[in-house]
Image 1 (cartoon, rainbow, N blue to C red):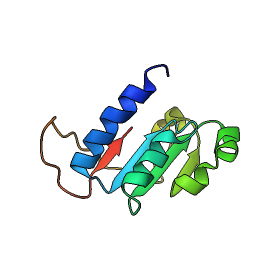
Image 2: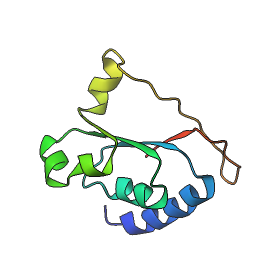
Image 3: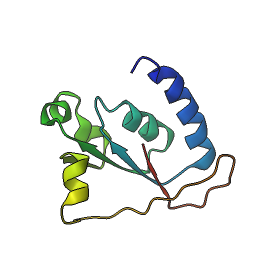
Length: 104
């Protein structure tokens, strides 16, 4: 992602303002968003979905995320739901209630 650093800084500002307690990172990759969230909110619940098992091992995603699911998002959405997340859309500039989940 060539513009990732700009997006990362804007996301950090938004997350610091809203302070969610649960996060879902779809397509963890190297885990940079998970590490950023863990650094901002060490006690938050962070789950990740990563299709490539080699990434999970190579980037030690299990050390960053509370749960890492090795699957495609399509297989999760099309199959039986072993777990669910409540997603809440918060308009820009709105105050956030606790207990929400942000899908990254």
